[in-house]
Length: 206
Image (cartoon, rainbow, N blue to C red):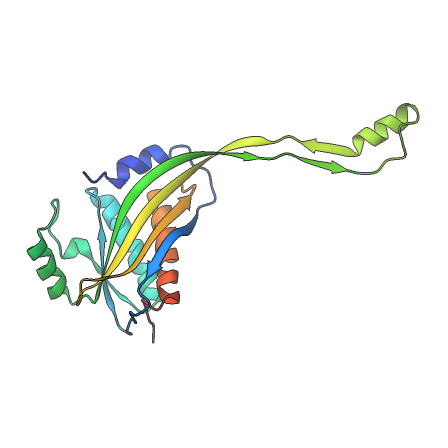
């Protein structure tokens, strides 16, 4: 059963710290596929929580618009509150005029312990002769001890299909580090995915 993003993110982001960043840890593209200007992409979020669905659709839509791609929110075309059967889904997508379909799902929200090593700063001093000499020499060595930090990692998978052939043309797994909200995840991931799709020519602005 598909887990809702809200439940997972509420648990995973409870102790998250600042500094949201996203990277693609896996990505693949069909090198024979060449996107055309004026493409339309339907955005489908596999989540039963409408709030998270709209959050993802809006963030991805904004990223696509900047690349001259017309976004189509899946919530506006597919049945609400239940999974569409294959025939209905294909018909709805075809009638929307979409060239591409992007399907995104949550894989996991993980906690990771990371050790930040300590450091020592040394400033040469006169020597260890006498009380003040020792004091001055010791004062010139400053040691910052190491410490542990806990990171929250949100992992999403996105697959992009060509509507005409129904073939996979792009796939990626993203990891977002220490987001504070679901909106942080959506904004960061949407930008990262779109940037890679432009670089791999799945999306073409002109």
